[in-house]
Image (cartoon, rainbow, N blue to C red; front, side):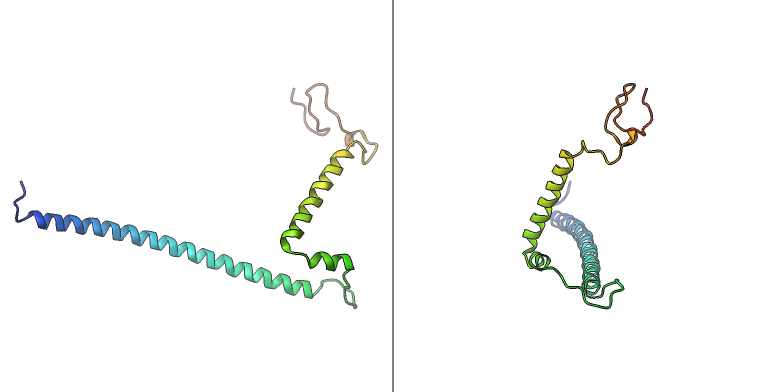
Length: 134
């Protein structure tokens, strides 16, 4: 049974242990946050390098032309649009092309049977070159 004189000491020791545990938890948490910050800084540095490389590659062409590339009026107008608008237009273009491709899939690229659409009567597979599942 703890005496009234040792009770404050036991509480102090208990508080120190709790405080030490909290400190250790905080140290672990801080180290984790420092690691995350370091990773983010590295990612930022890599992205900045990529951006710098893109702008220089845009200016310096790998083409073997002696003249300067002159963008069409439409290309210049598109390039001047807000990034959000350009992305919406690109997404719309992609969807429309997918729709057209779906609508025109009945037009075969060649007359070869392997390029046609259909299914195997034996197993129901719709890929000509696939193995039979029966």
